[in-house]
Length: 252
Image 1 (cartoon, rainbow, N blue to C red):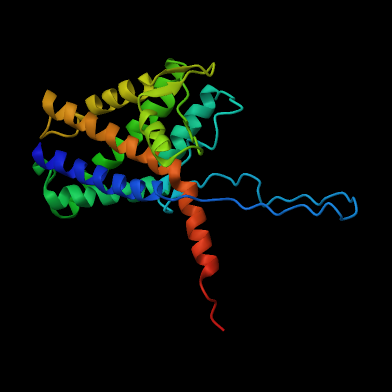
Image 2 (image 1 turned 90 degrees about the vertical axis):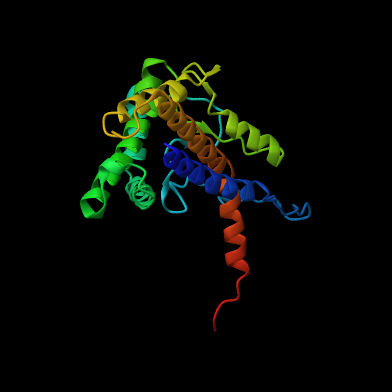
């Protein structure tokens, strides 16, 4: 049990540190002055400031299908759209990569001795890790949001101080919107992950007591919270990378 909790703590720690670094970014936008003396002409359509499509993967790996750039105007998802989001997150190639990484970590620390070592052991670790992702995604993004009429998306705030945005992103684990747009406790996240943890007892044979279940639920909520923070500040990071790339001298 201790090994699994330490492993989960490591995951939360590294993701949280990255997110806090991104939170310190302070992008600005510069607008060009309008020349009032210029003749009146029909301006060309400038798409430079148009909202860019959401990145489907953070760092090219972490799936990002349920992030929305803004809450306004609010348009609820249909049942099929909720399950589409869950499917995109669960079956994305990035999820497979993450499952393989987590499986490698777990095998390295021998967190579930019943899985064994070697290639066969890794296969068991991978199957368990990927199962965690798939079951968790469908519970929190498809099944419970449909049953409870809640919205599984993360709505980015994008404005305000870095600390207010940080608090907003962390709070969305416990606070969401129902299909009518009203704010509501995030039962889908908490209850959905609780059910996913209960189901995982079928294949985590070494850790089936209540304390392990509570620890795993806390770890999952912490990981999801860190993920929300990363999603909130991801556009800031992309702009920073773009500015850095543009400043780099080009080879002759």
